[in-house]
Structure formats: C-alpha cells, structure tokens
Length: 456
Image 1 (spheres, rainbow, N blue to C red):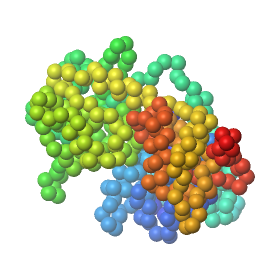
Image 2: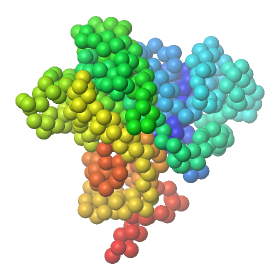
Image 3: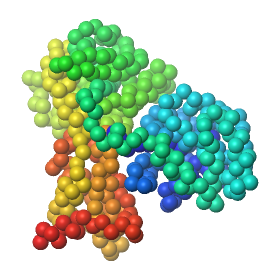
Image 4: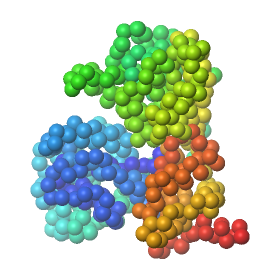
C-alpha cells in the first residue's frame, strides 16, 4: 500500500498552511494573513509513533485567484482529495461557521475516506464551546486546536493514527493477486481503443479513424490467462489551436489525468508515424509526477518496421522523455495484435515491481556501497552524512533517508543514489519516491557507518 495521505482542505485563510507547519514541526508552507498564498499542493512526510504518512496542504476552496489561476488551484485540490486516505477539514473558530464552510463540507460529503473537522484558532479553552458549532457540518467529532498557542497537537495526531488503515493491511500481501488497472493514454488517433478491443477480444470500444471518437474514460474488464484486468480507455487529446480550447478537450485532458491517478500501470501510446508532441510530453510529465509505472508504447510499428531500427526510436524517446529513462519501451501493432499480449505480461511485471519491499538491512548495504564509491559532495565546506534508510511504502516504492543535513544532499546526488539502488533491486523499471529527513537527536541509529566498520 502507498504511504497514506492526510490532505488538509478548507476555505481560504483558515490556517491550513499554519496547520501543516505546526504538525510537521518545521516551516514548510508559506504563511501569510491573506487568501490565495497557497496555490500548488505542498506535502511533507510525517512520522508519529513509528507510523509514516504524508501531510498535504492545498489552496483555499472557493477562492478567485488574482492571477487567473483559479482552475489550476481547483485541479490541485481535487487531485489531492482523490488520493486522500484522511481529510482534515479546517475551519476558523474565531470567525465561526459561514456558508463557504458548509459548501466545502458538502463537497466532501460523499467521500468514502474519514474526514476530521479541525477547528483552528481555538486559542483558549473558552473558545472550545464556540468550536462546537461546527458539529452542524456533520463531520463527526470536532477537534479544537491552536497552531499559535500549540493546543491539542498530540490529540489531533493520535486521532489521525486511529483513522489510518491498520498496518497489517499495508504490510501483508493479499491472499490473491489483486486486479490490475491499466490506463491507456495518448493523443488522438494513436490506436488506444483498437488496443483495448484487442485485449478484450470484443468490440467493447467504438473504433474509428475519425480522431476523438472516445470522449470519456471507459473501464473494460477482461481476463488473460485466468487473471482479471481493467483497461481504462481515455479520451484522445489534441493540442489546442492557439488559445481556443473546446470543453471536450478541456475535460478530456482532466479525465486522462484522473485515469492516470486511478491506474496501477500506465501505457503511454505514441504513433510511430508521428513526431512526439507537446501533449505527449505533458502526459509524460504528469505520469512521472504521479509516480506511476509506465510503458512507452510505440504503436503502428508495422508501418516502420522495415525502414527504421528500434534503437533509433529508443534514443529519440530518451531524448524527449529524460525523466522516464527507467520506463520500458514496447513496439506493437494494436490492429493485428502483434506484441500486445507480451506488453500486458510485462505490464504485470511492472505492477509487481511497484509492490515490492526491500528489507532495511538490504537497503542500507546498497546505500553503504553507493556512498563508498561516490560520497556526497561537500555542502558549505561540510560533507553531509547519510545514517540509514528504510522503505515506508509501496505503489510507488517509497524510501526515506535519514541524514545530517537534508538540504546538503543535492538533486544530482539523489538521482545517483536512486540509480545505484535501482540497479540492484526488483523494481528497476518503476519510479521510486525518495524523502530526505534530518535524524533526530534521540535517534542513534547509524546502520551505514556500522556496516562499514564491520566490513573493515
């Protein structure tokens, strides 16, 4: 199971960013006493009582952004809500219940995940009775807190832990292999629906040479070798002409993004007869940012098989998608079914890789060897130390490295460590999520150094 995500939502200026900083114990999100400061999602890996979860701050719901970024903010909020394990609905005790709070609560009403109502700015116990007014939102127990007066932090964190899925559900493998969901995304007329029909061995999708026939995401369930799968066929996306963009294209792109978030594995379809476009790169970036296992699928290869070597296309893809060099590449012909079954079988391998776990001992042995070959570069005349690492989640594999100075571990060196570890692990073709955390003073673990001493 992926690291649980605790998403902070609410109307503007109720103290969502202050809540994130307060719970994390450090200043992460920008805090100002005016609405609209937070636009993108801000996340932080939190540890409390040996449980890890991600805290995610979002922009204010209902704000009209002064820079015309309202839709962007709303997209980021909805993305966070869609991926939430728990939602913290933040309200302002001093201002009391207002209609926009009720509107936010209505937006969350049909969600299946737990929602905790956090009454912020309850600076004194006298305000706790005023906070009780938020019970009218129908979100269960209301937790009065104060980020400025440090009230009830432990109470809120303990309640979050109570609402998290049991660790046994995260760590134990299910009795049977879960159903794999595959999202098929790409530009218009690259053969996505034809591919789905080939998988399902039935005309479940409308297949046409007219670009843009599929206008909504459609789930197609099928079986292969006794295993059940779901193929999510998404709308084809075209590059808008100038600044004009139809509502079909707008919602089509958002449905494709939602399908990527839902999927276990993504097949990014490319047309062998067409050059890579801006839309292809945007989809690739979104897949990468979502940490989804991805196959780069070059369709209609029968039209080029005798005129272009596959190696040339591989170099072409690596040049255009530098962040996805780990992603495998498939050359298929969906219309005839050539290499389609092999692609799906390899997709199952990606799915399994994304759910693999590595022991702490094995991870630290790999880190020790990588650091021995190439120590971290100097930062402000001091060399940062990495003490130990551990895996805290799957789908994607999520690693945490505890070190002396997280800011001193540069991005290139992080990529070097991931590359070194990836080469030795069972998830070499899937994205790995990496967090750096400062080792606490009471934490004396130094497994990498210990192993080095033992090896000498």
